Length: 323
Image (cartoon, rainbow, N blue to C red; front, side, top):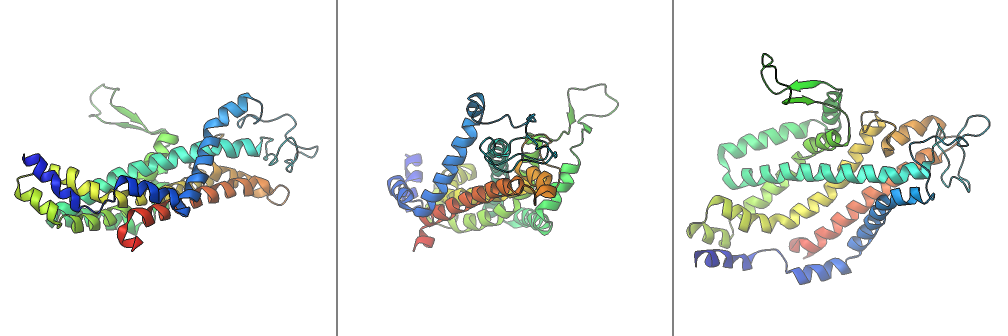
């Protein structure tokens, strides 16, 4: 009886009905455009291995014997290489397609990492307040004061094969040793750890507003625990904000991954990262501009798709914005 009474105030929630949300999402042009672009990019990334086996795409990591002209320069776009070749004779189109797999994977995983940290800290800070809120917000502001790219570079500099011993050095154990290597896993963890502060302040503000609503007060009076109030009443009501932040944060994580790749501290070569492709092709921009333009256009399209999707989701999921 108590559970039913506690859950009933959720009718006052700001979360729109599922049917109305689905209908609004389908009709929203920003969601349509961003979702279509992301769908095409995802299908292209997923089908890349099949396209390679079908000899539609060249292998992205292998140098083609005919990939350079007689002067040792990259080919311009032609029938064999639709976007030309890079400075060592690899197909640019193939590397851009495979770079989509890397960027989408790292960007999405980094967004989930940042969202997990940011939502957890925002919920705790806004719900409990007091000294804990003060401590968490000062920590957040300290991280916001340092540019994310600088923090990411500092963390990436540690990924040089060093071994961290998670036990006293006097003990002859090795199963607790952690080796820091550059790769996709370490990269999305780094990006996630530097992108969470931007979410904390927004989530905290939402929690401060929702926790004063009547249904939350009713649940508290009826004896609901803090965990139940957070998980059953507050979190569902801030999920629209979380979803919008997640979509827009993915665009930032992809940009940050490309920036790290351009600086040479992203995914190790010869992996086809968009940022590293731009850096490698920059000296050949005059002779073969497609080496730089193709991955640059891929970054712009992907970031634009996530921003359009995020803006459309905000129009649909945020009633106040819609009004």
